[in-house]
Image (cartoon, rainbow, N blue to C red; front, side, top):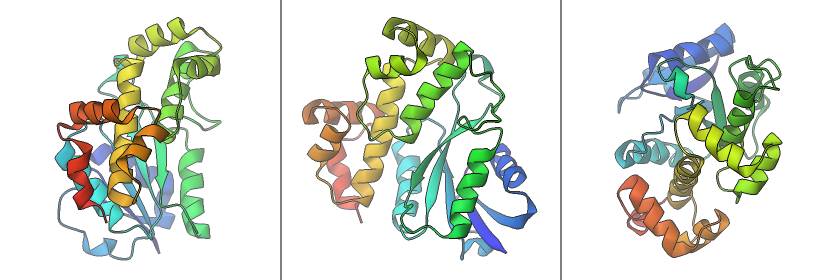
Length: 235
């Protein structure tokens, strides 16, 4: 039977993934340092993001992925909704290590993205005309491609509303400012690139749309450690 490894501290995420993938796939649940015996030959890895941006936990997850770069993987990020802080409303997917994916691995991604819980699926429960849907799609754009440079105007254009409307409603509906959400996602992506690639930190900053000095300060502010101190952990 094909195997997927889920690195998550939350049982509800594990139950959700098992429900989506059904009985055709064996899902192993890694909650701590101890690898389940059944996970040794996993063909796809999912890791959960809880938006806490704790450097110790993020390093553990990304180092785990970096050591298994031949295995396709994805980060599952819950949709952030202010009024549903204790209820799981759906997820975004950020894909890693997706070169030369097998048929099975492509099928796993396709199944996840076809789920009613995936923010980009045609079966997603929130109506496409609602303001909430538009805010969720902005979240998805940032969460799934955080390494790409975006600005307020281009994101507002996605919604069909003004930049001021987007800024106001993003915070009202998500519970976090658009600027803060963007910074968290970009610094998370940068942490992965620092650990898993040989790119200079300056290049990582510029590709994300930041000047290197400002990026270093922002990264330090979010993770409480400068990006330069993590380069020695790469590879």
